[in-house]
Length: 245
Image 1 (cartoon, rainbow, N blue to C red):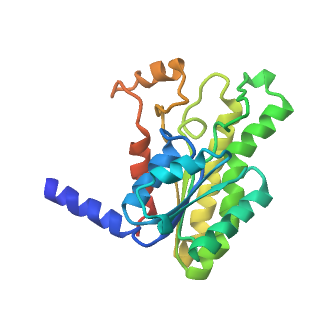
Image 2: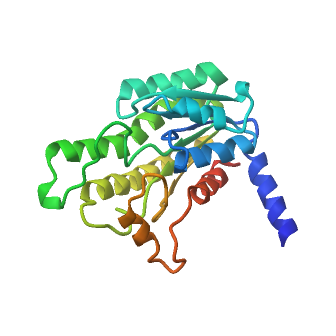
């Protein structure tokens, strides 16, 4: 069984080797985005990572790849202009874009996160939550699709959540709405792009323990049968699989 498992892992690695990947929301050392980026780089992909702060350059140093096979960019992907510029920068750096992991969302460094009960959600909170969780995915994907269509190849992996499509939690109305919408958008991408050699999938994690997890979230993560939260690298491994051929 171990031998078969090693063969399966080798096939996954071969499926991304030499490909160009962009992973958004990769600024946190212990987050899902950086976990996915590390696994892609270790499997031989050329990897571009992005976040809204300069700490993305710290993550760049930690990526297991040679300097010519990795790059980092600062961008606020809730702004269409910056999302388009990011994709253009990746193309300029590596010549193409084969894999897109849309992980940006939930929190944005340097800005307060607000989550209100449904009767108290303000217009600003509603729009901001949809902007960082849904617009980021939409803007970057829209900019990336033409590059994939040109090569007749692409892998789009959207990090959604069980919150929204399957379950919810108090004060999670805006967040759950954004993540449910992401799943619907992913279905549309998959339907319209499949005939062009482009796949689109969404990962829906439950409780994942990261550096931004609160004690309440950690306690909730011990409630499922496994009695623990998921780990970022476990979600990253799913992203690596979906990014392969």
